[in-house]
Image (cartoon, rainbow, N blue to C red; front, side, top):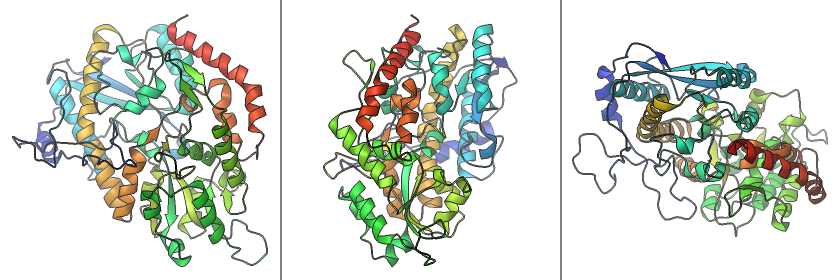
Length: 502
């Protein structure tokens, strides 16, 4: 940790305390269970007793104040130059000042409060994704303590986790993973043998932005006389079959040349990612844990294969436009296809809601569909391509680790009641989403997020192989899995040994 002068935040503290808000408590609807993040509950500052609608705000089990002599809490985050002007760059860790933009100001006020309480300084460095592995490797080898917290992009992070660069977060003092500002689904899914190298937390909105969803064109739905799709979701009827039926119904050759091209109207605008996203939407995991809390390659049951083959077949239909099969269309142009009326459904991550805020398209937001109506609830996959999770290098130890644990717990707790409600209520639900019913859908999406160990750690490269099934039209998946299972299992074994230090 580096030393620096304390940044005073008294001018902003009063504003921050007045701004504390909360998401309402989740009801008993099985489609919208309570979530570890995104359904924050807060007691407004100054009220002596919580109202029935506003349960008491939980407090972290850490000292309320401290003096760390102006220590610099140094965050290293991944950066991709092509996305420099998008919300895929981290906007949730550091802000230079108040700008009037909701997320920026929530981050600035949160940091100012924590800096003032503990006499620390929060800073951030952006680094190209291709350089983070080397930088952390050198730091760990040399004992360099510059980086306190690291966010490698998950797509590149698997190798770093297997090189054992990071602390076991379960052993970091003061991090209380029973508290709602740590994502319990993430902790349960990604930990093994009591070891957790990375975690999702309320400190960040970036991983929420990386959550999969489906947008639909409201004019397109109206023009084609479609049923109310929000009702279909609430009644549990939003399934693969319904997506296919409506997409086929609305697909049409706009220019009359006898061939549906990217100049025409598609039922579904998608990407290779639909293979993975819909698979998890169907309630599946590629990797689970056994009774000894160890990762196991679990894909391959009859149900698994049925779901996977169905997605492959959907992606081969004429109504499905796969951007990744059209090199001439980049991400921006792909979004514009939807915004300019070339598709009914549009696969997206939630960051697209923000990206489309200035457009004229009247769109709604839906969760990833179920495989069938009998499925218990909707599931939303967190993409490894556009986010990272919090990790702490091994070089942070002793008193420094104790201090960092307190600061991270304080940041996470404060974020739960300020940043996350601002992200969901103000940014997604009110400012960007086009109707109140989309806001209800966002609750379902955020509250049922999936973290698959296979997608995070990519054992034997199977996560990449699986995503390729759709665009490659691979339907003989059973034999493919049989060939790869030995490699995958060896990779899992090697990973577990690395974590245990064997």
